[in-house]
Length: 384
Picture 1: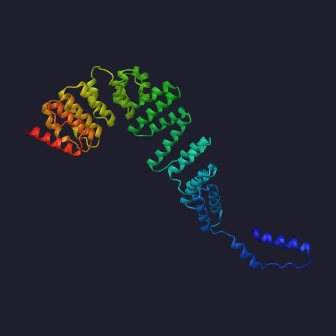
Picture 2: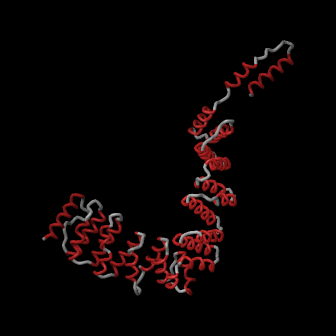
């Protein structure tokens, strides 16, 4: 240690200046002095915690590195996670990557560590290393998808559109039909961004089954550029989006385009959209049926009056009855009052007034007590 070297050097210098014998510390005493200045492992970790609590991240990182380098120390995953976090706070990204790499060696099946390291490598321009790390095979299908999604994201983010598209094609070939369609659609988008329109059309054609290909003529496949980018140029493009696209955002774009005007079979399309998995699409469909439909079309909407899991769908359904219904529908609307939701209550009240031509209460925004009184009054009125 430094203290014993200092004692020896001092003794040598004094000896050269004087003939007087310099006392030499016994070896056991020197060892005790050295040990008194050695920080044990636990104390070193305490020093690191204290440094971190005072936001002294570089000092904390130095303590952690010292601890990890000691003989007999076997840091676990939580230690390397700590060191990686501190290294990032200190701005030492190389040390952060090294810490995460050590963490990964202890837990190679954790996909999120791989993604973090790959992200760090990509930010530093080491794309090949990042892609290699994400190409690792994992047993768990969900974990493998995490790596796959991250790989595709990095390819797209860094402008490697063709590579990303070709990866999607390989994934599609190895996937079941429903997942394969999504990969073919993604491949088409990436080929389009790469400027490879023919490849984009070929990819999207694989996403359509034989029945759909009969509906979409072969000579129209070039129009699938609008399909993939969600940019309909006409009613046919918009209907394709609504009926065929697996992305709910694109289906919403399609149905909103169809709202612009009348066209043959428009009502059929909006009735079809009532079964869409996107509640935004369904809400548009209900509102359009209310504008274009007849009283007989309310049978398609009746179930949405009790759509308790979606507030907006209930309001849209009540407004549709107000628009298309008649007095005979008042008893159907009556049970769907909700005094706790002002906007829903307002739609319910206006609907009953529209259906019956009768008005109860004059306040535009009654309080809770008044809303309960209005519900009771409507029940009494309709029971007569």
